[in-house]
Image (tube, rainbow, N blue to C red):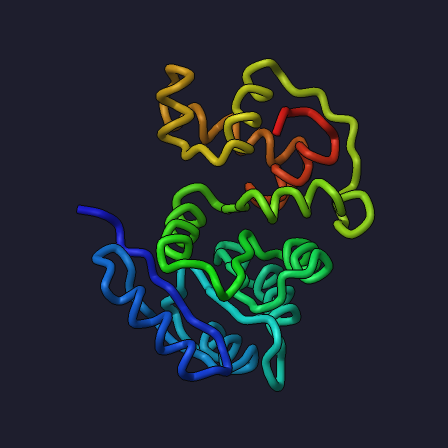
Length: 217
């Protein structure tokens, strides 16, 4: 039986929010935990409920507290929750800023339902999902916009192999299968990579890898 991915939707446009909910509720492995109209409602829900979402899908421009500030707060206070930006804004500055403050994926609102579903599942199982457009923006703007420090880190051959596969957006199970390792061993190497590179999450590892040119992407 597939795991159920708990999703929280945040958007001040009620019709759009309900449309996304309709799409997601048709999927057996996705459940809608809650809806919020802005960042204030979102944070209030998280602070007053023991059950939290696995994935938050949030708009950027909303009243009271926008998606950027809400993402920054959640990334610092609820770091296990994955945040996907879903916005009508596709400029490089918006994308880079959201990745900088903690979003692990960025989708434009004219994305297809299939793209949205793929993003949610990739974020849940891999930890992040950057499509080609977002990956190019990260590559172009990383030295100017993203606050990831360049570090001199010595990685083992195995760690380099695993970092390469992480950047190719492979799951732990896929990496284990490809390298003939156990999933637990892969998790151990991944945790070492996080510690060595001072990355807070898998998305941070990808940013580190690109900035320091330690993998081919």
